[in-house]
Each structure stands twice: as C-alpha cells, then as structure tokens.
Amino acid sequence: MTRTIRIAVLGMSHDHVWDFVAHAQTTPGVEIVVAADPDAMLRAKAVARGIASTSADPYAVLTRSDIDAVAVFADNRESVALGIAAAQRGMHVLVEKPIAADYAGAVALSQAAHRAGVSLMVNWPIAWWATVQYAMTLIERGRIGRLFQVQYRAAHGGPRELGCSPQFVDWLYDPYRNGAGVIMDYCCYGAALTCMFLGLPARVTAVSGRLRKDDLPAEDNAVLVMQHATAISTATASWTQQGHLTSYEPMFYGDKGTLVVRGGKLLLSDAEHDEGTVLRVPKIAPGFTHAVEHFAAVIRGDVTLMALCSPQVALMAQQVLEAGVISANTNQAVSLPLPPASLYVGGTER
Image (cartoon, rainbow, N blue to C red; front, side, top):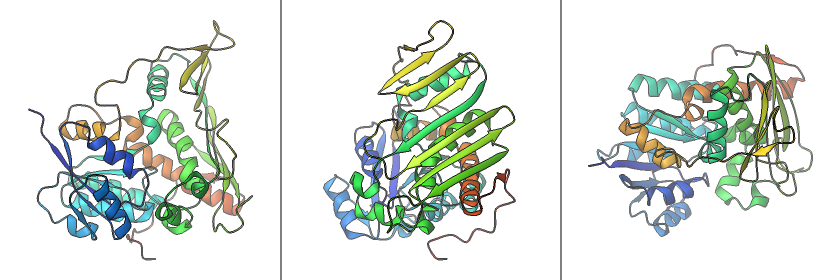
C-alpha cells in the first residue's frame, strides 16, 4: 500500500500554487492537509479549490504533527525563511524556482535541508515537459556531442498583462522580495539549464534595463551571457514582449547536432538532417509527470531527484543570477564562484 504524503502549502501568493493544488488532488498517495497565508482572499480561494483547512500563519502550521512535507509558494525571500523553518522540523521541502531571492538565502536553505536530512526540491515548470525531459536524456547520451552553447529566452508582456494575480504581481515587481526583476523571474531558466549540463560558468556578463515599464522599480528586459572554458551560453528575458514567438524554446548546441524545443515538439539537426527533423518523444516515465508526483516519489524513495530540480543546480543558477545583477549594475563582467555568501538574516525584514 502506498504511503500517503501529507503536505502543507505555505504561502499562496505565487500563482503556480494552483496547478500544484490541482495535481495534488488527482495524485494517489498525496494529501494537502492545510494551506496557510496571511491573505484572507488567498485562503478563501484555497477553500474554493477544495482545501478544507487553512491558516493565516504559515509558521504556526509547522507545529502540527500530521505533516510530512511542505510546498512553499510565498515570495522568493519569504520562501527561504519558511523552507528553513520546515526543514528544521524534519519536513521535506519543495520551493518554486529559482530557489531564493539571493545567493545567501539559497545557501542557507540548502544547508538547512542537508543538516536535517530532508529532501529539498526546486520546481522548474519546464522540467515536466516531455520534450525537455527527452532532450536532457539525449544530451546525456551524447546524441549531439559535446555542448558548446545553451540558449533560452523566456518572455511575455509582463506579469500584470499576462493576468497574474495582484498578490503575485505585488512581489514580482519588488526587487527586494523577488531578488531583482525579470533577471530573477525569467533569466533563471537559462541559467539552470546551462549549469545543469555545463556546471558553474567562469564568468557572467549581463545587460538589463527598464525599457518600457516606466513605473517599474526593476528591470523589464535582460540578457545574461555565461562563459565556460569551452562554451558560451545565454539567458534572455523580457516582460515587454508582445506575443510568444521565440519564447520558451530551449536550444542546445553540440558539436554533432542541435536540439530545439519548439511548439510542443523536439527538433534535431545533425549531419543526416541538416534542416532538422521532428523526433518522436517517449511518454513520460512514472514519477516524473509533474511536481507533485515527483516530490512524493522522491520522498518515498521510489525515484532519484531530477537533476534540474536539485538544490545543487539551483545553487549554481542562483550564483549566476546574482552575478548577473552585479554585472548589470556595474557594467562589468563578474567572475565565479562568488565569495562566500554573507550571513543570512531571513524573513521579509531588511
């Protein structure tokens, strides 16, 4: 009989929470026992979505004895504090990408989970695309040879224009709670994919600007360049793009071939297919369909945590993002690794 994983949702201001809730309610062996957030409107929405128990205090929830794990959907800074508090009580932790608002927070959360001996999973929505999973498999098998470049552009017209909730927009547009603007929200994907395959780059150069949203206290467009000894990769992001052409298309360039995810398809170009061919993508394996299923399977020991969702990859990506923020602000390239992270204070207070 499958052991039921009892999960508490901590924070609900990140709109990804509602997909998580929907998947949890249809995944055998998973139960959301409580959802907590200070915002009464979000608690009412949770009740409307079928969660019977709610709380205004996420930290008070952690005193319960019927919780195995937490899924944290607060802002990037508060999520670290909540994740640390949960790990210290022996609960497994899932947080949304990138992992934190800054590198110090990422280190603190990772260390807390390691000391407690609990699983720490970072949810990257693209991890559950069958095309991305198969691309990762082919790259690991050497199908396109040695990688020399990863490219990923994430873009749309902006969180508010996209229809994100007011609670989500409120902290996405706050450089302190988010960690930056579009650099943190969307350059993180390219950084994570690059670091997963190529490790930590030696140098990061970034250019960012507030090109269209004059009332935004953060950058709305950015480009990060990551340099390795034998590779140069880019992460591009925009909150001002009209439509989705060229968005959400991971590209992987190897010395024996090229892989591109486009329009729900995986394309391969190599010596035999110069103009590219559409590959047949296998069905996703059990335990890897979505974040809820994978998190529960990892906790039970049924599967190994996917590399893209590991704290090791998230820590490298967070270094890249922090270096990108520094580079954009100073107009200088930043060498990695960064100096040891400063002392973590935690919470939402400066």
